[in-house]
Image 1 (cartoon, rainbow, N blue to C red):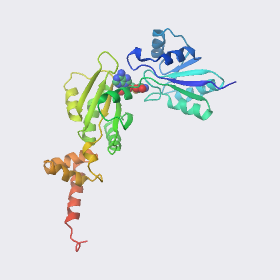
Image 2: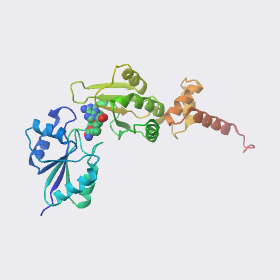
Image 3: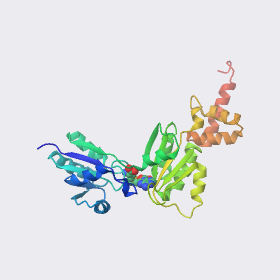
Image 4: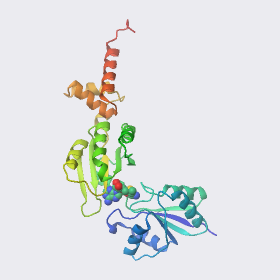
Length: 286
Ligand code: SAM
C-alpha cells in the first residue's frame, strides 16, 4: 500500500479564530488524530464540528506511540498530530514522532500556524533578525543558572517559556547571570487579557513582584547584551574598565561585569586584579 502522511497541525494558543483554514481541512480529512490530551483536543474538535478517532500521544508514551503512528502511516493512513496548543514539537510532544517517521521514510507535512514563541517575538520590539529559542529553563535554581550561563555569549534575542509561579525566580536569576538586559514578558497572547511588559530584567521583575499574583501563560524574551557587543574579546577586565570610564564605581563595575559573565563577584575581582598585575609587570619580572 502507498505511504500515508503524518501532518503536524498547529492549533491556537488561545484565540480559536487563529486556526487556519488548511488545519481545519486536514483535521476533517485525516483517518486519525494523535493528540497530547484527548479531552483538550476533543473540545477543540467539537467547537469546529469535527469528529475523528483520537489517539493519545504525550510525553510519557511518545516513543511507543511514535512507532504506532508511523506504522499506521506506513500502511497508508493519514494521521494528524496536534498538541494541546500551538505547534507540535515546540516544547510539546512531536519530535519523536517526526524522527521515527523520517527514519521510516514516511512523509511528514507541517500545517503551520500559531506558536507562542514567534507571536511573542514578533510583537516584542526586540531584535528579530536572530533569535534563540530555549523553551523552558530547568525549574531548579542551580540548573537554571547554569542554563542561563550557557546563553550568556549569545548575540541573539533569547525566547523562553516560563510558568507563572516561577517567573519571578527566573527573572532574578536572569538579571544576575545575564545582566540587566532588556526584557519583554508577553502574557496571555491572543486572549482577553493579553499583555506586554517591556523594560529591563530588574524593572519587569519589580513590576511583577508588585502584583498580588502572576497568572496566565507567558513568554519571556531577553534582548541581546548591548554592552558586551562593544567588547571585542569578551574580556571581563576590559568590561570593568569600560564601565569605570562610563562613571561606575569600581566595585559596582566588577559586580555588573560578573553578572554579565555569569560568574561570582569574587572570581571577577580576582580576574581584574590578575589582569592589573599582568599589565604592571615589567619585562624584568617575566
Ligand atoms: N507548543 C506550544 C507553542 O507552539 O507555543 C507551546 C507549548 S508549552 C507546553 C506551553 C508554554 O507556551 C506556556 O507555558 C507558555 O510559556 C507558552 N504559551 C502558550 N500559549 C501562550 C499564550 N497564549 N501566551 C503566552 N504564552 C503562551
